[in-house]
Image 1 (spheres, each protein chain N blue to C red):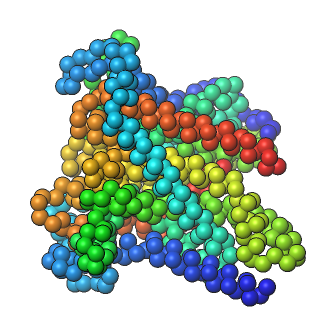
Image 2: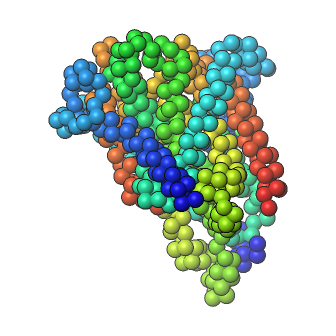
Length: 294
Length: 290
């Protein structure tokens, strides 16, 4: 890139300092504090704090509740992300055909972007209610077959469906933009060789979409465990019997309901490490794909 | 081959309609169920067709709950977030791209780092910091008063503003602006600020509009941070208020029509925004990828 002709230390200082100050105060400081508190035992109600070394980590890591919620977080990450990427993928490939319907679809499919996770959680909580909801007829035929209030698997399913609904806009837009950016010379060449639309879609356009697909999937991993909070808090409240207590929800409950600042901070640190590891994996794998792409 | 094409398109069309149906059905059910009475829903379950109680239920939302004042809070917080991000990231990205900074990469890395850890996974320490934002200065030994921004509009918006996505998006956009424009402006005697105001800002209008819409929607739909950072019902955002309606119920069956009416009211502003400014929103989302 050619150099800009402008140069001004004063303007740079003036323009950069507000955002740097804000990120320092509301991002880096809290992150540092979380790390610090994870080495201290904080007394509730301002009783002071004492340095305890790795005792907080030992306590959290030997707590079966923590491992259970970490396992649930992992399960949710996979079972919620896969449909939240596959369904938009199928929709994007269908919308890519430029049919009349795709104009309507491209408008309607981004609507969930305006509905908060917690709002759609309230709505889906009603729709999946075993007594007045959409599956009530099933329960009349086979009593008790649908019961998200007592069956952990049912509760998990409601979260996955709500997460899929919320995740469609972003993934659909990115995947469709990726498809439409593909040069149509490949498809034309394939058509000349006698490949029909199915063949073109599966053997040419889908493999060429791999970079976007990968990007969306990795982003969805983090997005799903974060978006889950609003859904859990409105649909299952972590239940039944802790079956949907993901780590984000457990940290909130420990920190703001149980007043366990040290425990919550320690788990925050562990969650941050997990998210950073996912980001690092994304970065490394993206680097690799750039190499073979062109 | 003609046949396979039509079969493919027919299936594509069916898939798109299924997708549209999946998106619209919950919203439709919410709106229809909001138009029936409490007793009707308890007796007959959720509704697929309109009833005569929509206005009654909406009136109840606006008189019996705090949703009206909470929607006002959401509007303030979403506007603050969107305006704050647009101004700050425009200035920051401008300095990063057009001012030849020696440590620009370091500044960019510092700001980019915030994208990796969203506020939702660090609510506990962020809350502690917000309850006394002078703490870092007090730690340095400066005699500063305690200032808590918990339960204020600005406190609800700040963690979202202190975020790098906007800077990242605008930086990507600025890098596509031909540097010859800057050189031409320089030759005509314009300084950096003049170039920013008269050349770059008009060029950036679509990108800024996309960023604004995206961040407004984010500010409106955030949940975890507003939930912990507001301690009174009158300072909660509408989404938090709606969720509290659903979870703070007493022992009798939840008042579903009221909840659905509230859900419809709370989602009306952002959904209208999306339907009207669809173009900008899609462009904004596509920009985050690059």
